[in-house]
Length: 361
Image (cartoon, rainbow, N blue to C red; front, top):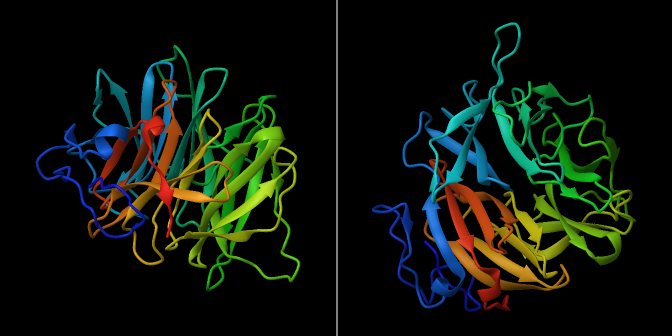
């Protein structure tokens, strides 16, 4: 359900006409508010050869939108693979399996958290994780160049490098890739630590940067950074914590060093977020504006990455609406994909020029 935001972020107050998900996967019926900003709301697939889907990613190539996610019996099951769909002629193609966790000895491990990225050399990169759990997984990568019909062989990333852990990397002016990553220890409770990975050779080799501890020595358990780009080579990362709020860390030197992890004013229910810097300089974050559960799913906007205003509620009914991915396409529109009740992947196309943001109260 898409509902507008007038200072009340959680429930469906001032509710608009619902987008009836039970009868249609795509509709142009919107309220006075959402019809000015929301262009398309649709499911990527109606039926699929897997029961559960989660952790989507989206990218635009010269041939259009591509999305991927992990799907299988359930999260963590050995049959979970990376599935992919393309949007062509106004519709999504049937899902195909783009990667599995099959090993040379016949063992099969689950796949996790795909990340798609299309670089300036027109190569589509697919990063994903393979392993029995987030504490023991490793990073994998495949590539597909424009004009090629098949993906490269899957390549394991170097030890100590996981690749972008959930959200897309950013590519700097000199071509350097900066990816937000993180680890989850095997301790109980697991220690969550953010780090960043930089590559100057299109993902062949990587260096790792860890934000320093805070001055008082305290640690914020945080994972899954999303990176925003500010003027003058300044970067900002936002992400998930166990502390009830979204974290942030800043870099003044294009990701070579970072400030200690700190908490923002935005709530977080221990759930993934994503964010993107628009070409007009504004920043968009998609997140669950709550400290418990994974509904509602919200869009907020900021001019400086510090003061956020409410822009849209993507979902507000009971259920899980989570793990968003967000990009801006060449036509200026914003595209969001997210998990819909662990059953499907939802895609929403938005015109950010028609946002009517209000203060978060």
